[in-house]
Amino acid sequence: MLVRFHSQAGQSLLMFGDDAHALLILMGMSGDIPGAVAPENIRAALDRLSRALELTKTQAKGVTRVDKAPDALEVTVGMSVRAYPLVQLLQLAERRKRAVVWESETSGT
View (cartoon, rainbow, N blue to C red):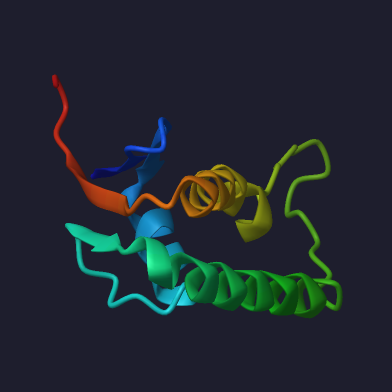
């Protein structure tokens, strides 16, 4: 499933459902799709998300990983990188005093 985040602030983005759900929870939202955050609640959601992402960065520093195959190349994208477009959207919506809405995006639309 894909989740589309959008705002009348003028930006839209698509995200895989599992990542979207995890970020919504980190923002302090219920994680339900569809949903929205009102302009007056965006600052609190951004603050929660920033604190949670900082914590995940700190925890990840102590993790060491050994690949099973020496020639295997595995790239892991951290939650902070996945969150970046959403953070940008939330900041834009906050500046323009607009809500951010998320909903399931069906293929072919």
